[in-house]
Image (cartoon, rainbow, N blue to C red; front, side):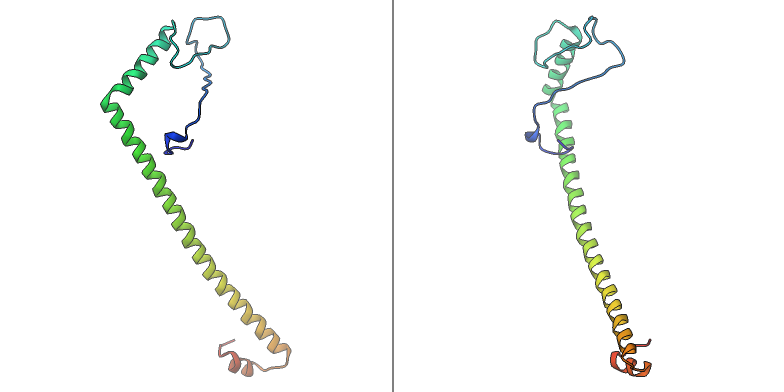
Length: 131
């Protein structure tokens, strides 16, 4: 899930945390917990309680909603800017390509005229440009 996308797109998540300290006093190299699991581990219980308190706090909810709205707005604005920039770039690239193509065609035409024996004056008269 990318930042600012709808939470409805969120898939089930597994978190693997590698810490540089011992969070629990246990001899096992790893521990497995479910967030809603009732556990005897005080640190997990404390984290679940804190998460529950935060989810019930109206100010925290409003901050989260505001941040989510800002992320959605930002994603929309960036998408619009990208689409607009791409369209503008395509337009400029197309115009430049046409101009380069016309210039190349003129040079090829002048070369063919010279090869066919036309003088510089005749070429100028036919294509109405300075060589």
